[in-house]
Image (tube, rainbow, N blue to C red; front, side, top):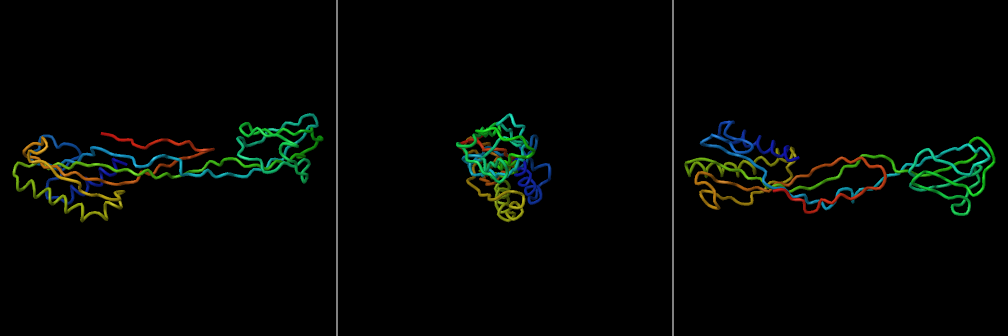
Length: 232
């Protein structure tokens, strides 16, 4: 995601500024008297959890089981089991859970109270299982970018900074297509202020984007805590 946003911003800077292509770089443009450098300095994940908002879908399965006349324990074909919907023995005669049978959902085992008579497909069990499905979870991110203009001449340096500000307002439709939901300038500093070099001017931008996480789930989802993750 960060690389995707890097590329989108860098593409607009290279194509929209009146500078040589090698004067616009991701990271410091070493050895250049004049340059524009782009760096992601910080990002925050705004999502509080992954998976907490997603529901697990279930699939109904019917097993027709043979009875050998000696056992009352039957193993289902698709464990683990979410819920037993019905047990019929023989088919058409419904049994009651607790009175007529017991279930071990995690193992997919149904135990009848009474041993059924021998017969082919004489026990019918209808049940539901978690179905493997693909889910997409949106993880909202707020990224901080520093764009530093290095130029010895004060007027030229400030003109380039103003061109960058105009450029990102003008190019918002393109950036949205590339995954940038919002881009907003937060502040600018430089020209010796805040410990910066005399020949540099830095613009700080906040960028909002959404990371789409494809998750395949089987069974109940566990929360993955992301609240407060911060990288500096």
